[in-house]
Image (cartoon, rainbow, N blue to C red; front, side, top):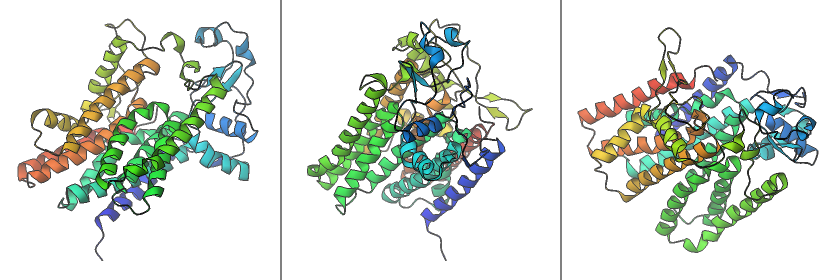
Length: 456
């Protein structure tokens, strides 16, 4: 029996899921599946504090603030200054406001997974496993999107390039670095998942069948993007563009309210949730985060930091160590002497280190023979999105790989499809086929070791 092309992608997704489970277990990220241990004490100054379990417990008691006592911070002149609170126990990377701790991380996995499990069983579910489940769902639905686009725009694509393109998308953007399974990774994986689900729902708007239901679900998934991670609102530019194209094509603009209503509804919920925590409907809590520096001093836009962020996000190359497996590691050595303003910096692998994205950019600049307007418009939107990411990250967060993964993944998806379309237009000639094959395989080989190196 002949296997359908899209079934190959499903098989790959299942294999990747078990690889991630094994890798996470190997790196001791999975020490339990369920636990009854209440993560209230002792206070630990660590990025491994499970805010999700704490928030689940708070919700189960009918409150939003953590049950943990923040008495050590209430008498400090400036509790956001790490120099003042260093002598006292506190919850690291947790929101603090008016004597209470709050979580600034996504409440989506809590409402739909963690809280129901806890209320039914009394057990907390391991968020590292939930992150790996998210990654599997991302791979599955990206496969669905990829298949639909290929079938529509590149129907004659050979099976070899079909599979290689998918492997490059899922392995070439460093997404599996999230298997470390910390609280940061769960919200990132949730945000990427809902970006992917939204794009997938948009691809289903190819006919008027169940159009109202599909628009409502698309609106819900669009809303969940921001509920997962507020900074991901920048992807609304790309999403609204695709929505406009499909609504215009099907001549169903009169149904637009079915898409907008869920977005408005969940936006109001987010505003309420912000207000009850921080007394402002527009405050998500970033400036009240108890982190390794006084974030209030750097919570503003700076052109110097913006340029610096672009430099690292584009040009930072990994570190090569031939004496240590897997030989390629994300670089943490920065040359900061030219800059006078503080900017949080962590591990970063620049976009131009990804051969697929680099070739896509060079092709767009030098030899763009794809005349379909949608490809060119999406390329422009991705450029704008990247600049907005740099502005947001350098103003409110910092420069680190986990803050750019979402863009890498979206950019990789479009880059692969664009390059395959270009190859199709060149009738799969030998030279172009060798170049694309080499670039895709090289992208996987360069990024895969980084993804599965020991989680930091």
